[in-house]
Every structure is written in C-alpha cells, then in structure tokens.
Amino acid sequence: MSKKMTAEELPACPVETTLTLIGNKWKVLILRDLLPGTKRFGELKKSVGGISQKVLTAQLRSMEESGLLTRKVYAEVPPRVEYSLTELGQSLQPVLDAMYSWGENYKASLK
Image (cartoon, rainbow, N blue to C red; front, side, top):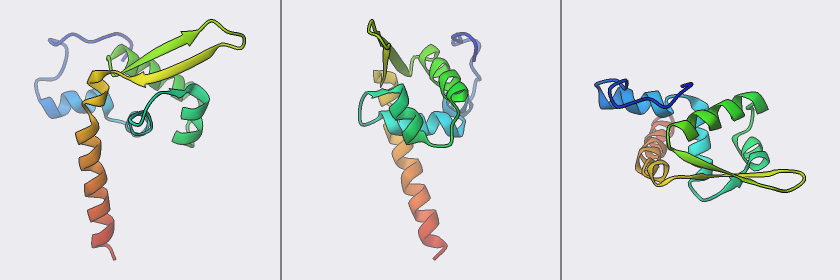
C-alpha cells in the first residue's frame, strides 16, 4: 500500500481485509518478531532472515501506514530507529497464535 486506505477502500470481506494488511510472508514474520517487544532495524533484519534491506524497509513503511507499528527515530549519530507494534498490531497476536497451532498440528500429522 502506498497510502493509508480508508474503510470504504478496503475489501468488503473481513478475511480479505486481514490479508490485505498482513497477507505476505514478510509482514507476518515482522509481526511475530515484534510481538515480544521493540526492535531496531538491524535486529529485525537478522531475526526475519532472508529479507533484503529494501524489502524490509518497504514492509515496515506499509505496516506503519496501516497503523500496525510505530517507528521512533532518535536524533543520534549514527541514527537509531526502533519499531514497536501499536495496540492494533498487538491485537493480531491471536491470529498468529492460531497460525502457530495450525502449523504445529500440520507438521505432527506428517509424522
């Protein structure tokens, strides 16, 4: 998303709305890694793994525009930037918990 969407612009289906906001691999992994608390850009890049700096920056900006996370810049040299989930972002924890449980059950069914 390049700009914050209005309620009228979002899909009518709630599932599609959720997928619009977090429907890619990177956003879900960023959410997972921010649920425990605030992280710096470099920490996120390491913990997400396999993501380029350009893609991580784009995903973080999109999530910030959607209201899922906040970005705090400290006036230091070198600049320090921290990311935290908003209350709205934290409210996605049950969704990620359900995905975790489903993944565990699926892996167990393959044994």
